[in-house]
Image 1 (cartoon, helix red, strand yellow):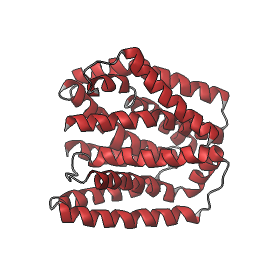
Image 2 (cartoon, rainbow, N blue to C red):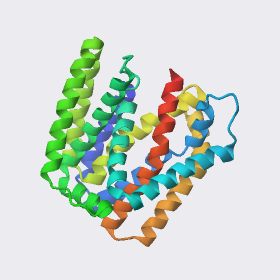
Image 3 (cartoon, rainbow, N blue to C red):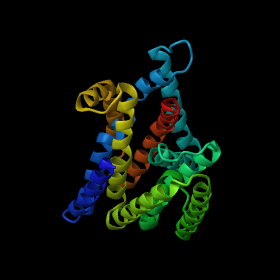
Image 4 (tube, one colour):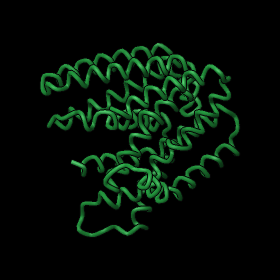
Length: 294
């Protein structure tokens, strides 16, 4: 709860900063945040894979890295060959990933399919809450990736469907888990905070604040606890040292994209495509990590 209080204060501080800068400066600041803790939180996957390997034989570093790179390349190829399908999968996988981070420790139900669907629907609710306040920008980015135009009313229809499904799932979980009521009230308050954040911010700045404060930093804390027993400055240094090479490699890849494609809409599309490619294997690793923690 202590970190959540910090995240709320930091979110509104981010809104306060938002009022002093133009949309272009917000864009650059948002990317800086995403490039820092955002990319860093997925840069230590190779070390996590080594620790969550349940087989009797230890996979060699080269094998682990090869498997990871193959998944990244496959994701990038999907964005090139079937971009609309890749984008849809990215949104679904990201929704699950965000929901898993938020609910994994709180949702104590034995029905694994329901838990998976609940986490995905919650994450999609957050994403489409952001999309609903920035439909034109999201449509432009989606068009740059897929070359298909999404009618603006579709965003509202999908959002209402997700809200309805979320309410149904919450009703079911409350029936199965009485302690869910307290968590639901707290998470509803967080959703209100997110709505204020997304409404008052630009697309990238709002996403960056959520992605860093409510997902990436909590994920880094969980990873440090998993790898080193507890979160501390000393263990963060160990985490950062192990992730540094992969973090720098990711930054170099993004920098190359920017230098080649400086036009904003094209870069935004390629940036999210790149982010998706590295998200696919990361989600699998984190899911495995949470499974091993249990």
